[in-house]
Image 1 (spheres, helix red, strand yellow):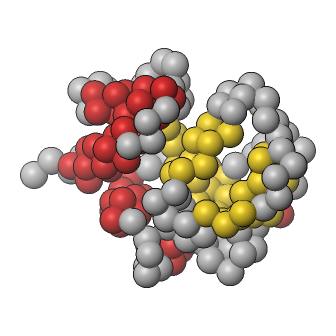
Image 2 (cartoon, rainbow, N blue to C red):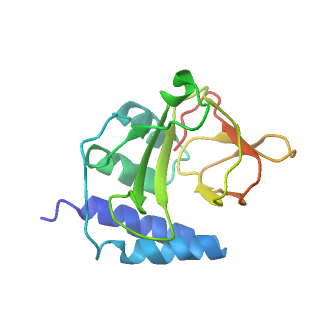
Length: 179
């Protein structure tokens, strides 16, 4: 049996999801994910263990099936606590990330990064701005997002959240974990 099958299934499921975003960046991510299994898989020792937050997130009633695939792959992914510029350790220690596809990912790729972010409940990621555009697909849990001066709005599983390059944005969780 192929022990990478859950990882391949995760990549293909994410590809299907991002192809439905219908934005150039989403379509590029979908195409890269679809061919990722043909490339080398690399792994280093994980620094963190987000299984508790992943288990809680995928158990939520409205979690997408992809969340279960993430949990199945969790022990074979390289998780780190997110350390953004100026981010306090208190917040950083509540955010877990792994890059599935990209320059530093499990599967190397240029021009696109696809990763996972798991956040514990009651985590407020402060407003930030950067050169890269980003799109989030909510897989499990809810989070509140803000873009520029729009005010926070709740996003649920299945919804995309897009941040254009150089747009001020932030995110916070409330009582639920988020994936």
